[in-house]
Image 1 (cartoon, protein in one colour):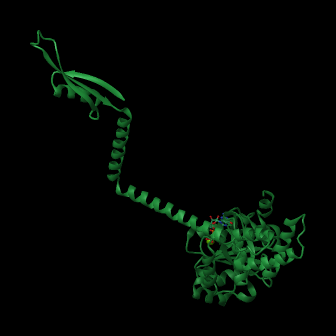
Image 2 (cartoon, helix red, strand yellow; image 1 turned 90 degrees about the horizontal axis):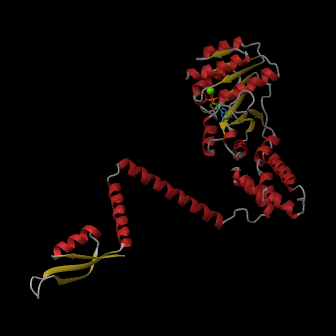
Image 3 (cartoon, helix red, strand yellow; image 1 turned 90 degrees about the vertical axis):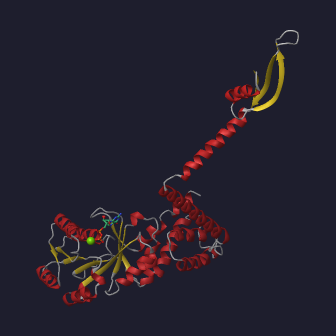
Length: 386
Ligand SMILES: Nc1nc2c(ncn2[C@@H]2O[C@H](COP(=O)(O)OP(=O)(O)O)[C@@H](O)[C@H]2O)c(=O)[nH]1
Ligand SMILES: [Mg+2]
């Protein structure tokens, strides 16, 4: 608290002094009139004495308030877009919070695998993280639970035991479904699927294996004539492998290409996403190639897609018999369960998984061991870090 005394000949003058020195918020504590000087009671000078004070804390607080006021009034004149952005991000944060709350509530309220032994729960949660379907998980859970109750789970080497059991389960779960890459029993190898999933890149990887490792005489045909870049892309790979390419615009070109490659071991056919959605294309092509005996068809799906979309794609391409799936871009996801779900739902096995853009190396043929290896990724690590 700052206290000061002011003297002036008039009250107005005194107040002016106070205002100038202490500001508008000064408080008058006391004021009195006094007389100075003069002679024998005459000619005395009237003086006004004022004691005023100011509290610095109050002053600071007021200054803060006035700053806040300035800020908020500034926000009123913010550009509308900025305001909208702010509202949008607030809404997003609110939505995320809501989602998180829901997740916590779900986690708290039910552990869907609680009826199983803890060791069983652990593998089920691991596979659930991979998005393996609940129905498969409950089947696996029931089987494992029984074995655990019977004391079949060893104290040492539990991870290995669980891995073997998962493999055993998948063997049954996917029974009757053929896994594995090109059989080399059919001349034409055809990749179909939506644009951008990796058909051309994968076809080049598959062809490279035939040329480099199997020393086969192969050729490419492309019917993806919608984009110049798509033709150039395949021509580049063909150039690297030193094999011919025929670009096919209409069914007559197809006939000519087939004649041209009559003495080749295999012909790898690249397609545009839309080809096999067009009934006419399929009908025309069927007149030239005996699909059942001469063609092996791979439907390419990206593992980065949602399962719902994969189902939709499978049904869109149902005009043609699909021999096997190829799951691409597994390097861009950490959950591989959709592979199992799609295979078991559609009754179609997988030929390959691809894990990168590099041709020819980023491709692996699928077998049971590979599926289990992918699904168990991180499981042993999780356990040892507990
Ligand atoms: N990360 C990743 N990218 C891939 C993979 N396979 C293909 N791609 C990329 O996906 C994009 C589309 O591939 P492309 O073969 O042209 O697809 P298409 O339209 O189905 O023929 C290209 O950039 C490829 O390099 C893969 O396994 N992993
Ligand atoms: Mg392509």
